[in-house]
Image (cartoon, rainbow, N blue to C red):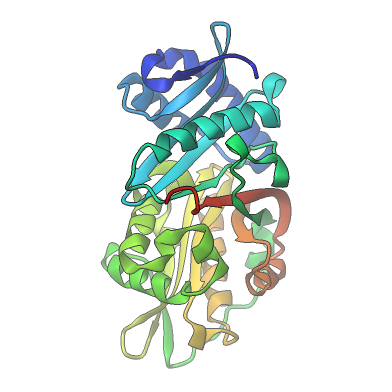
Length: 316
């Protein structure tokens, strides 16, 4: 291991700047994603000594870090990044073990989740303190907007209309997500999908915080049936000036195969192109072949693979 682990609350925020600059460059190079807003949020909380986490030190230099947040019964490892010269499963596991060790001190925490985009360790290499997670392969996908611009508009039936997103749909969207993801593999990865209460928190994070980019309500859509009920959803954001992101797309089961999901995605991408996006990204669980077939139709290709991790048998 590079050196000692120091709690972030004991560290001057400025010491994190070189590491965060390298992380920003990696996000941009690999994923075409401007990580600046997230890095600034890390620095803001670190400067207030309000961030739970650890820095990995090599002498006086910060060469890695992790932080986590807690919500109700769960801990979420928000990030682990180790600088290139020090990146190894040993150093990453040391940070991850420290984070999980602190979470285990809280008897109300029964579960931990992580989706760590830049973790070098994969599969059996991820075993902090011998604690192996359940892992789920995920794809980071990119596609140019020109494909969607050339696709035909779907003619909505009289039973379905597509409307622009507004915050008045927030509670309906939360209920739809809980319905759609019941028994779905993505609800094993993110347990916020289990309930409308959890899904509402998930949606608020998309709308209010920079983790999924700058929310673009003008590029987000809902599908509404003849009774005025939301039955589909596509939320979009911008992650840099030329790149949009599909932060969430879901569709009620009764609309599968009817073209509604296609039209929600098409409108989202076309609207993103209208505000300057030349390409769009999204993430998908590798086993969700139904969704991936739709994304293939729009020219999306997997450019990066990562793992979602869940620890749910660590605590009695």
